[in-house]
Image (cartoon, rainbow, N blue to C red; front, side):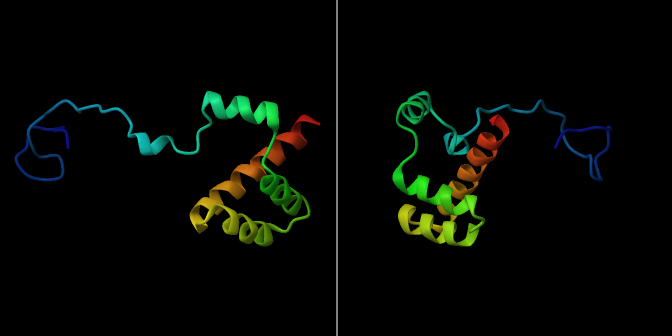
Length: 97
């Protein structure tokens, strides 16, 4: 914590230092499309399970879509992330049309 006032006690106590700015961790960039993934997505579209999940999301079957994706990707957290990603894609498609 940086020193704001020259005090030895209280919330703003301590030796004044400059903050050490570090690079964001590699784990923080998960979920971002790489150039390669983006290119493949453009050329081939979505995987069959992703297309089925998008159909479920179109008819407002969010819970069923989550269960379906979870069975395919393995974990609940990854399934939630994938469902969110696919619903964002659907929203973008709706906005374009």
